[in-house]
Amino acid sequence: MDMIIIHAKMKVNRELEAEFLESVQDLIKSSRAEAGNVSYKLLKDTEEDDTYVMVEQWKDQEAVGAHNASSHFQAFVAQAPKYLAAPLDVQAFSGQPIRK
Image (cartoon, rainbow, N blue to C red; front, side, top):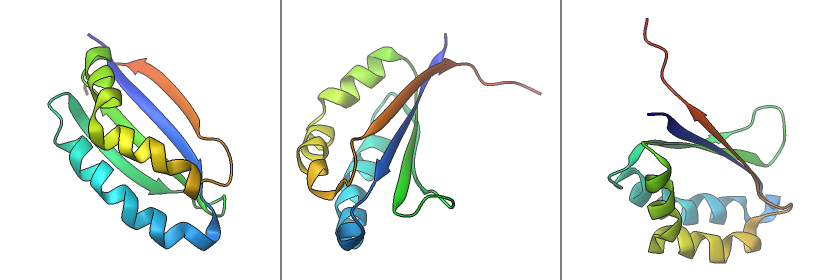
């Protein structure tokens, strides 16, 4: 079964970057604790200023659905526009690990 990989690109308002980084911690911690989560990381883009990418891996589409319905995700979505300088750019992929 293919896992789901999500890249959520966020262009953050420079003046609110520190507040954004603090507010996103609960989302990261709670998402990592979800049963269907494989990995959940916030990465800073080294080429685009004020840009972050949430790289998520989920066991399956059902896990993504449960995550999207979770209270911690809904709370973050509600407050995200305050921090973002551009619309959220989300890409989702289906894939399997390559075993060596």
